[in-house]
Image 1 (cartoon, rainbow, N blue to C red):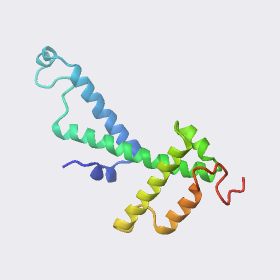
Image 2 (image 1 turned 180 degrees about the horizontal axis):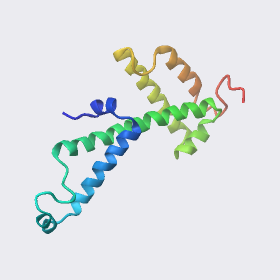
Image 3 (image 1 turned 60 degrees about the vertical axis):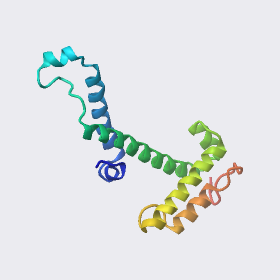
Length: 150
């Protein structure tokens, strides 16, 4: 059975997006081929419909892309904080409020901690979680992170 967890280990964000694009294009082209076109094309139309496995792979790849993009987004939030960005600036860059950006980042940190608690190797260990929380600071504090010399 195809699952996002299985595919997440096989694909990077770039390769998952490329495979997703190929399958999605084929799906779109197949849906535009009418019955007359299929009969005229013979046993192999130009845009064959996706098999069940490919359709499920397309769904799972969409989830993999969303997960990997969300993870990368939070890493970039950390980079922005480390570079001295305020939560107001980060919220604006994300098209949201500073509070929503801070809360989403806090949830991500907690998820990383939970992943590490579950399996002992993925996510963030307790020291990394503490450092991430310190860097995140408080949402109502628009000052630079503690220890930022800039």
